[in-house]
Length: 108
Image 1 (cartoon, rainbow, N blue to C red):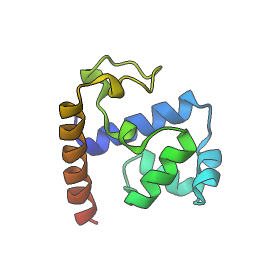
Image 2: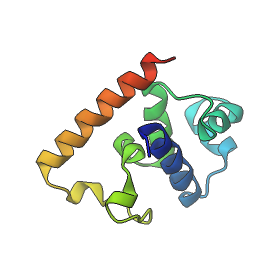
Image 3: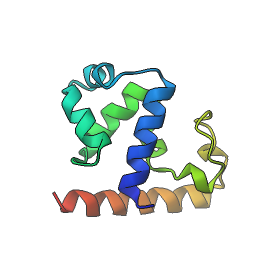
């Protein structure tokens, strides 16, 4: 699964976990519900600024949107899975996420 698909899956899962509609999340992010919908179906990808707004609306750290939880434990019930990883691995994951975001944004 590529990083964009991981982001989309996590966005949907965390939004549903917080019982937020696309409309309510869009309100928190000061954007339109259709934009959130376009992100969730993969037609658009948010800027880093919007990723921060989305994470804030979901009450999570932005990096949580890029973690492939199926490789850790597949559990979306806890936002705390990632902080339990060793610091070296955290740094490596953050570096990979930053590189992938740069590549994705370069395509648009």
